[in-house]
Length: 510
Image 1 (cartoon, helix red, strand yellow):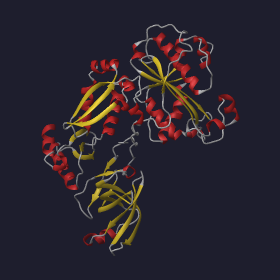
Image 2 (image 1 turned 60 degrees about the vertical axis):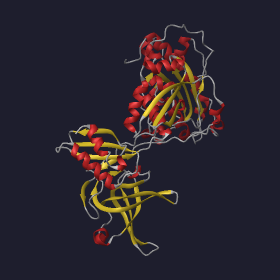
Image 3 (image 1 turned 30 degrees about the horizontal axis):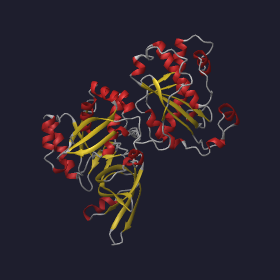
Image 4 (image 1 turned 90 degrees about the vertical axis):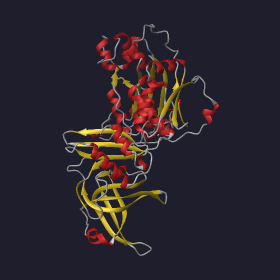
């Protein structure tokens, strides 16, 4: 059966009329074939059964069939996010100047039309690299719609009044819920239920047919106001626990009442809002286990925020040392990539929690290099939520009074994550600061995984100096700055990085 034949059969079902086959994954070692289907309509257990039967008919009998279905509607905010993520992964230079704020999305003539606001230089960049068709293919593989892309002139030197007045939209945090295959299924209530369970931690969405699987921690019988008996279960799958209700049926009453603490069960039902909060109610209860030695997959990182909320970058033109460097040709590796050069001030040197009480960040300073030039800056003090040591105050000049009204790191990290999106990261002894960033980002469910470049290591390979401290290298290039403040250190490191790469004419390990 071909892909088109599979979809033609699947779409005979009303709730799959516009479904797309997002991905097929084959695990040859486990002899398992997984189909990931996306639909824009709510689907029922009967629809899931139909999808499984359709997949089973398309898969060789030697392979186990697994079907995962997600309901996903292409709202404008989500489409913007997916486009921004695609550019960040596939066209880094385009991602630097075509952010989610530069994309408009609208329904038009039965299609979803997305438009990039670009200036003349950016338009040429898009057209010569044929970016729009790639974006269309990506979107049509993720959503049940037809897409069309266009470029529209936008003067980025001006801020339109209507844009200033426009109300900021909330970021749509789309992260597909994690799932696992149910083992040792044993019917109590109803056999024809999904055999794929959603992680309890990820059950944060409405669903008419949600399946969870875990170990009973507590079970109690209660009676409703109408005198109907029901059970309150609390189960855990090692990612989280959930408490829910199940109304007893006469035909399965004896088996269900026999369930006890420590037993593993599979529950399928509705996850709907009740009194402004999600509440799960089980329709069917059966026996079943997570896979042997189940280890939860890592939670996918949050998407890049749509807007800056606490700290916004601003444009940067530095005139102080503009004449100190020769204007030798900027190598392509600098011109064609985007870099964020950053530096931190912290409460101490502990940047790994296993080494003792984790120190915190008191200041973030960063600049963005676009097209080989320093064009943007991001800088903020950070409230460390602890008293600063006298030695740190003497070293950095940052006092308790200066940071008491500053934003906390949990509020700053989303903005810094957005600023760094699609960029390589650069620092002086970069891994020291990067560990702080990764630790505090992970606490907020963001993932920094960018490649880094270290000006300390590059200078050691290119220059012959008495030492390779930041101020020593700065003196070599005639740069004066206020050392031990994050913003000044970041700007100086950026200038040093540019000069080092101009001399080296390539990125390290490239």
